Length: 232
Image 1 (tube, rainbow, N blue to C red):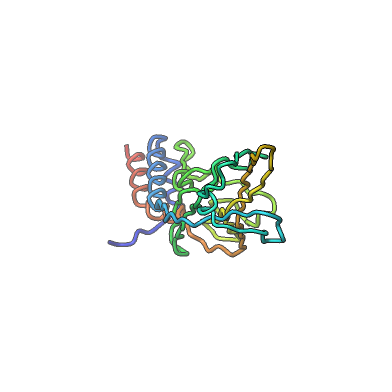
Image 2: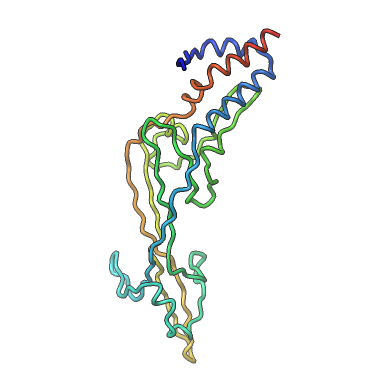
């Protein structure tokens, strides 16, 4: 199949002459093409054993460290009552933590759209967030907010499309710090505060374009839709 010649100026001229309905159809087709370039990826769910930390904290270490599975299943905990000292404490500590091992696409190839690992974010945000305005004839993705000092040079998805300075942050549950208060009668009030292992890395992200390639791929169909409208 011959490679299509992409002429964005010609498409622009046709769009100005075409009907509103034809522009809407062409824009919807372009949006579908862009979404199809971004593949969903769920990654691989992996588990790791958690730990519990007791006693005094000494820098990055604790006085006593035990495996959560052994500690939480011990019969010695029968006199303990779990309470929450703060909103961060948990009432149901887990023996194992979960995380997703996510594989990114190769540089220069369209990005993958992942299941989220951040509260408040939507699964496959990048793919499902591709929108279009049929009247304006535009396809877009709502940009994600950039916090001051977060290290990114551009909003998402512009950073994905063009590349730039980015920061990778990994936050994995390591276990729980156990805080005990001894009451009269032998009762023990216990709080479990999550402890996380956090790592960050600043790097230069290479482009993984999907909007411009979608426009090139859809060019022939777009011109066909617009031309048909003008000819009628």
